[in-house]
Image (cartoon, rainbow, N blue to C red; front, side, top):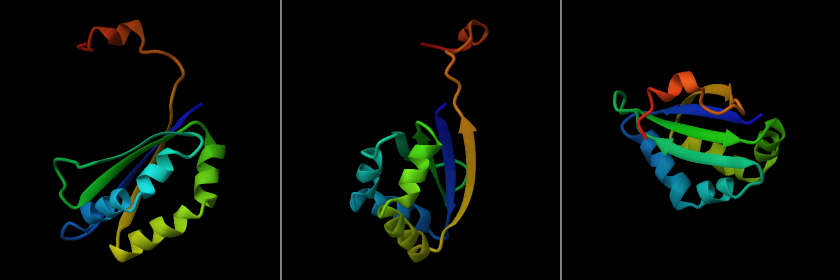
Length: 110
């Protein structure tokens, strides 16, 4: 079962956005997206909190996350977190293999 992870990176004076920019510009995001088992890796800006950047990260399973955490690029990520003095709030969700139920279809505009 796939795992969706959200990480809210919180910093001061735009530092979370600078962190995400550096992750993209340094090619770290591209390397993560190329890792076996990564299904999605995308940053978002919450409308109601300018000090936060939200990462939505999806992996095929825990083994893929473990391989990512054991990779050499984690040292680069940790160094950038430290550079920008970010705190993190992490949430994990298991993704159902089921399709959207018929009872929910009426609320989806295609």
